[in-house]
Length: 246
Ligand SMILES: C[S@@+](CC[C@H](N)C(=O)[O-])C[C@H]1O[C@@H](n2cnc3c(N)ncnc32)[C@H](O)[C@@H]1O
Image (tube, protein in one colour):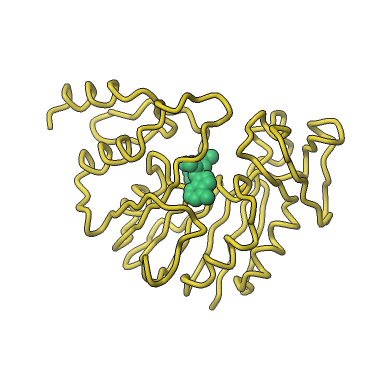
């Protein structure tokens, strides 16, 4: 496909979440503020089989392939509308498929499956070396079940990125009114209390998230860090946990 056609096809899609670099300075027009370096994903993923949960346009799927992963399976159930999107704004896999084809990845090494995390199993997807679980755990009503399911099909490492409560509480006054340090806390949002998005159900402190990942069996060399040390806005109140089994 030539560049003019590619740009036309990118612009024809109603909504992009991710900025994905395709080629020659052509980048999809998403806005998600991903600071890749802060995630500390290894630069070399050669030979790894990766599951990308809640892939959306596929930024991390394609990033894993760019870093040498031998196969990535992306899943999404398209349930997040950010509290503001219209139904037609999310065209299931159209954005993902356009990027996959423009980047030249074959379906054999880059599958995508419309499914909920609650339906993942070894039988349906096989086993994985690495699982990417970014921006999704706080959208789940059953976050521990999700971590247990991940553990049931992952032999290696899990990388979890999430909203965290260390510097924010929806019920204690907002920014700078969170639960810093080692407080084992999760807030429950029965409505749209977190970010005015009804699909946000829970948010944990970084300490709580770390212990949840540990309890799911990723209990070797567990590491956790805040993505922004002193966040000044809600979207910066994020944390990261990396755990492994061996
Ligand atoms: C905030 S976005 C994060 C996208 C991407 N992982 C990132 O970090 O940039 C959350 C994604 O998780 C998906 N999602 C929410 N609940 C899910 C579930 N139960 N199973 C699979 N995907 C889910 C949403 O549709 C959405 O695409």
